Image (cartoon, rainbow, N blue to C red; front, side, top):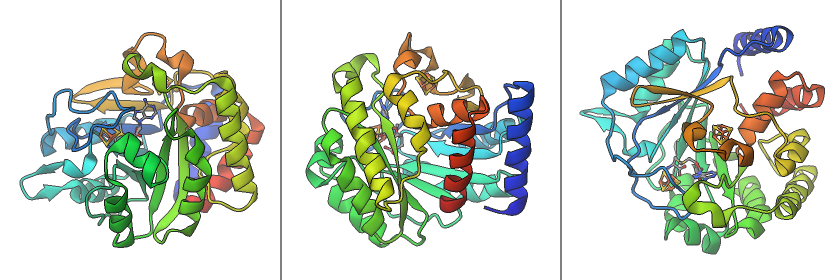
Length: 300
Ligand SMILES: C[S@@+](CC[C@H](N)C(=O)[O-])C[C@H]1O[C@@H](n2cnc3c(N)ncnc32)[C@H](O)[C@@H]1O
Ligand code: SF4
Ligand code: SF4
């Protein structure tokens, strides 16, 4: 991370903690909800299947920038399906950087060739070893691994949503992150139980076990892009929600934290690690602040 970006985030953090401000710093643009997969745990694919036009996405990026947001995510649906004429996802990433966003990340299912060197991180969903990943995501594991091998940059971070199907594959994914070329780290979430996927949620005991495995892997040197100090809060769902420093924009609609904010009572069972990490950070939790500094400087 550049020193100027670090100083910007440090200044934002100090102001937010000291004055209990609620201004956002992290924003997500949903470029489309269209997707080539139909994963078992996902409730947000192909609801409209509209690919939003370039001019609209550009306006939304500018709107987020004007709100003070400096960390931008592109998400979907499948982000690599986005195009408008000659323009592709890569053009959106380059444009976001030119607009002044300090960190620009993309979330993808990894089933398309990966040529996004300008992104700070490509969060690529890997949901287990071949067997369990394919049980969640269809027969995609080998294609993804091939795409990673041929990626044009080493900015990939695995993104695993832990659920009833893949809960025993956490160690495997940590080791795969450590041993795969072009992969920098792995970042985890627990399944967030939307009404149509409640059966995939983990119990408190299962979350405890997963966090123990992740902790052991971190101690053994596996590259995990999460904060250990947030684990007790994630296990007990005792972190504050929603995250006021995060917003998402989808087809012109801005929501605080996630597009899931409208699902009744879902925040009480939120499994997204970033929500725990950011809300605890901006409450001024000293352990989280320290761990966030070292972790972000290591992987971005
Ligand atoms: C909705 S997908 C969109 C981007 C891309 N299609 C992909 O799969 O990475 C973004 C991330 O959300 C995760 N996800 C989907 N439903 C979830 C849920 N109910 N709880 C936790 N994570 C979930 C996916 O596994 C994926 O890593
Ligand atoms: S690839 Fe992503 S958007 Fe598509 S179904 Fe799977 S999790 Fe949902
Ligand atoms: S806190 Fe609520 S709105 Fe935010 S990601 Fe979790 S479930 Fe969604």
